[in-house]
Length: 138
Image 1 (cartoon, rainbow, N blue to C red):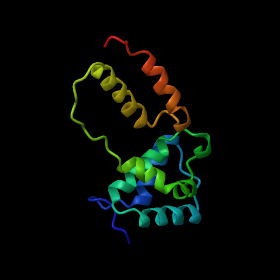
Image 2 (image 1 turned 45 degrees about the vertical axis):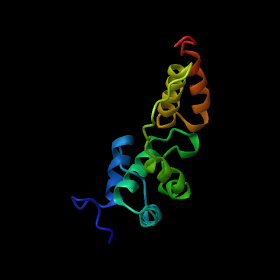
Image 3 (image 1 turned 135 degrees about the vertical axis):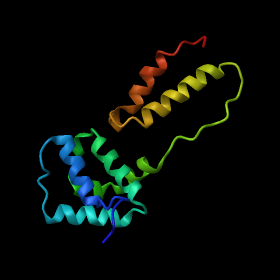
């Protein structure tokens, strides 16, 4: 048994409840889906990373993931673990002509990259649109 979080809530129960919260009905899962959740959890180092990866999976709006079946989570596990594990790191600001605009553009990249409400296929267009709104004389 995996043991779950500090309150003893197992990953499968967390996944069930978060799916229920998102869709407002119990997931139509059977033994195969629970086996997929167990396999996914056993491949991830910590409970918190597993939960963050599941949240990133549920937040994904791409049509392929519609319905958010655990088999698709297991299929793309590396992708969602990477999203969960990556944290933006603060960088030292440098001063040069156009530094303020470059910093604003970098902030846009961070915002769009870590925004799970924007489908991955639309992120580049979203960045271009937001960059065009940044004044040149900033």
